[in-house]
Length: 428
Image 1 (cartoon, rainbow, N blue to C red):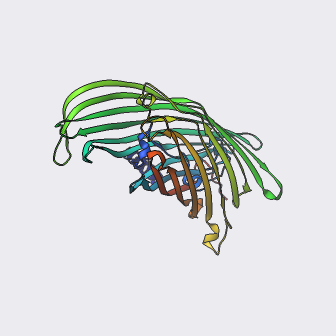
Image 2 (cartoon, rainbow, N blue to C red):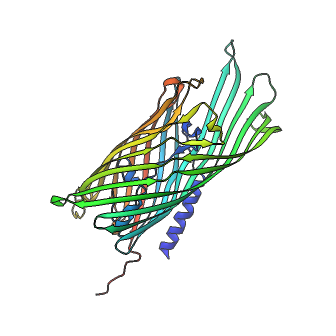
Image 3 (cartoon, rainbow, N blue to C red):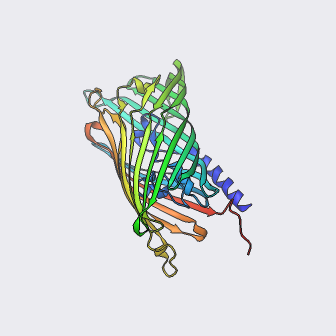
């Protein structure tokens, strides 16, 4: 009964946190918002690797084939704290946000298969930007406020099965859903009424991912791992309305709408192309592991949305290279607790695929790249459960061409609880 109450509480908490997710990145202005890493805290601490990695008590959000090796029922949730320093050519600002990263359950099905399902964020919108224009005397003649909130979440189910010696295959299906509210408010000097353009949209779509892993034992108990996933192209359907209306401002900044100038229906799509991830790894069971993986995706395209006509940004191909691994001194140490701790580290180089022109003339598009270094600890509890902590330092974007550079520190925390559901107990 306590187990059921705990799972129900975590699920309800996850829904509440995801519904209230906040984001402080100015780059969440573009597209469907700032995308989140679809990895567990354990994977994030190793540079985000996971396509070739499998373990009998850890979940794997990268490759569904990994669930064929799951031997315990695992229910896990993760929390992210993001400390962000935003820099432009003339100013700097620091912001902080905390949110739930995921809630998921995985369990074995017999000795050759496993299943997992859960709830995760896909992207988040949460920006507030101000742009002012000055006249020849240096006085402010016009102010525009760009603001947005919302995001996209997903419910997924993954299945993995061993089909031959050393070979596992997997299948994942998900349903993405969410809403985004974007607005642009404009006020000019000596004009009594301001104007506001507001987009209120709902996003939804489904996707399918296939995965494969191959494992071969070498000499000296070394294990070679290879993995690949292929996520088929899919659409995120976008529906809603946009409004343009006049308004007045109260003394405290309160907005009072006046006349609606126009109102239109929005009916568009984000076309998310085929994505592939390939990886290799080498290690010893419950001792050490080192891996590398490469992710590639063609450019996102849009149809019937402002993003397809607004020249301020566009999409290009995206890719990522990650290297990482872990070291576990002695899993069954009795005298020294720290010998039972798992130490993780990794590095990540990523081209996000977003290109932004900060000059305003739509001729000089700069790629928004991301680089991160991570490390983490897996602190063992009783009955194979663990508390996992991850730390990541990174930089995204640049101050060149009137753009914004983000320096971030991510602290991730997860609790992975293991149990022996669906395993027959023996009586001596």
